[in-house]
Length: 573
Image 1 (tube, rainbow, N blue to C red):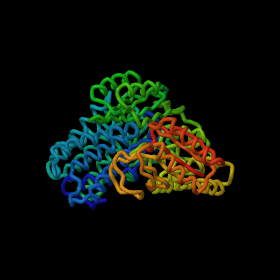
Image 2: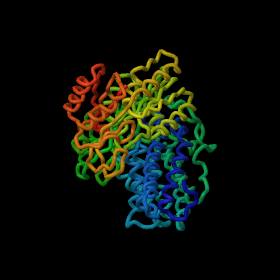
Image 3: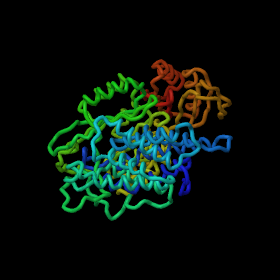
Image 4: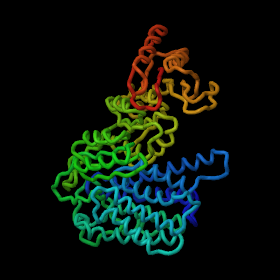
């Protein structure tokens, strides 16, 4: 990460800010999660903010890496970095707080990228903060004071009154946000009763603290781990009214639509989040329909890509509304368990941990269903959207087990999975990472999984099964490039064996048959075929016939993988 302080808001400053914001939220995450009780006591506000910023960081780093790999000496422009930051936050936004933070970053990017300036000064930062606050407020169906929206507006107001460089403006915005955060309990009685402040606002203060550090080199006071923070506690425990002063650096999740939570009042049963490709007019109609279905409605984004968040009782209707508006994807539906929904405040009995679980990354909905039926907790990785380490950590926590076997199912995710494993080990979970490089290796490992065996024995057996499975995929070349099999052109059908291009063809069935023959020439007892959405059943029938005729002792099993990126996955064990 670039060194601080930065003089102007340029691409390097965007990169520095995102990195520092991630570090700051990493330090504050558990504190924010621990006292997240409103509107849903699921203890994830800090984690949602962290995952949102982690996605923004990945997008900015990808832009810098792309320019570094190019032939020109020029790095990315401010517009390049700001747009990447906003896009990364949008596609990675989690929960109410993360979705609103994504819109705040998008609002800033709209100003910072306007007319493609080389850099922005204090005046540019003031305008960016104002646009951020205003656009976030417009994105929320029913804004209310005492939430992150109030904190964002106060930051912009304070910045408006500051004159000087970016450091001066950032410090003013931070101070204004801190003061507004401290006042949130006086604006929402439920906050005052709990003796805490708004969690989303608390997260925004942390992000603005990182902005101060970007331009001054000084860590802002009281952002995380300060004496004023609220004590950690069980995030599902009942909150008693505080007897003393409200801790300025405490936290409480905001209800994005501003509906006041009343003890004993029931709320919607599901949280629904999805990315949506749609036109502006369709999104306006979608807002009206979702607003009638539930609450906590936040729709952020623009330019054809939107992030939709809503709490509803009918999750299917919320998804159907998205389908009518455009193309929804990365759909996440979370059921609020007993005691979670909008705040009954009742203490739930702790759920007993399972002894062992398997957590696996899978490339398509079909495989996710297959893995789930086999007892695994899954993380869906869509093409071009690999999961971040925080998502794997969340999946391990959902598995709620003392021992976890982690299957990344992708060579590029090994380091991400290792980082997630290291983090959850600090939480007392025993984790074994099996370096599976394809979902078909994961299927082989899962087939021999026996949770009643000793952990070490189970891991060894699963590792052996995965290692004994050769893997291949058939896909389409996106551009001309050099490969181990020669030069391919855009549109060619490629057959990759163990990660390397081995066959270049023009027909999916013929290329897959050639790949299969090469793999079976070294022997095998079982062939696994996983078909993507674009591959007709006739291809599988053709390959099954080839195995049946040419390899008498080999069995074949076929699965539908859904939108998995590759046309076909092949495993031979």
